[in-house]
Image (cartoon, rainbow, N blue to C red):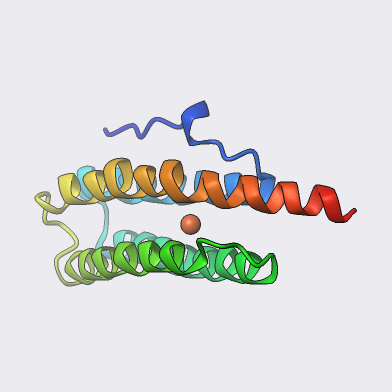
Length: 139
Ligand SMILES: [Fe+2]
């Protein structure tokens, strides 16, 4: 069983962003566990699609929020999302075509605990800080 650690270093302090990021980690953890347990195809595929859809929606929300706030690093942030999505799409595609392939587990684990956690620490924290300060001064 793989445990993705969710700790304070992954908090941006922006409630909605943190809730979504936490949910992404929870969904990825569930998917990783289902493959480890060699659960039914249907369950693994549902979990894979649910993770992918959630990430899409989350990135869209974040990008809208940044655009409305005139966040200076919006383009780079968006590019980091696109890079992550490319890796995620490829992996989800592989999981959908062979749901019981245990070699996909470390790939998923790396994508979340390295690529996505780095995105949170490098990009989400910066964006959240900017947006919260801006909201503060505009209220
Ligand atoms: Fe982001």
